Image 1 (cartoon, rainbow, N blue to C red):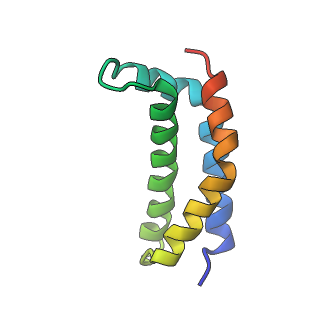
Image 2 (image 1 turned 180 degrees about the horizontal axis):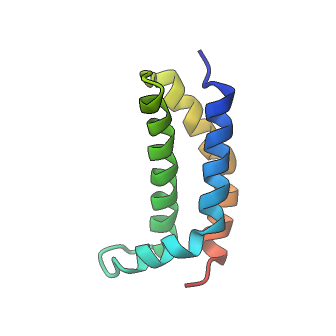
Length: 94
């Protein structure tokens, strides 16, 4: 069963939001230098993690169980939007 459209729309909205505030998350990543070697990749990971957390929370709120198929579909959304996220991270000022 595919991810419900409302959840897909929510994930897309989350991605848009985190892209718009990428500079804030880049500052968070910079706080971990020298432990992290690549600020942009770390920022990308923080953003994807935040979106994933929101995705999982929608299932919790609806008292539904996340399936492997749901996670795979989420990953496809992230792969499709990864260039947008990466561009925002690279262009983010700190």
